[in-house]
Length: 104
Image (cartoon, rainbow, N blue to C red):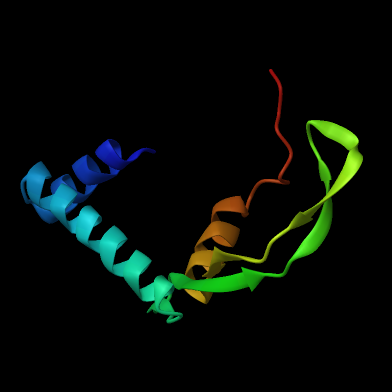
């Protein structure tokens, strides 16, 4: 699902205009990005927590020249940890199936 389809589904679900749903998504994106940039977490109870972590500096291999080692600097990366309700919902959707795909 992409952003346009998500906006359409939100608009249908809430009975609002698609433009309003798009504005909601844009505001959520902006606020979440700013909050993570300030080293704060965004927690939606039952859904999950967005946070930022620092991936430490390390030595790596130059992809253009595999024989050359390069220093990869530390970088701040986003992280998402799913909440219990989301995990339980996904587990419930697997009940009744063995998790294997049946070919016909």
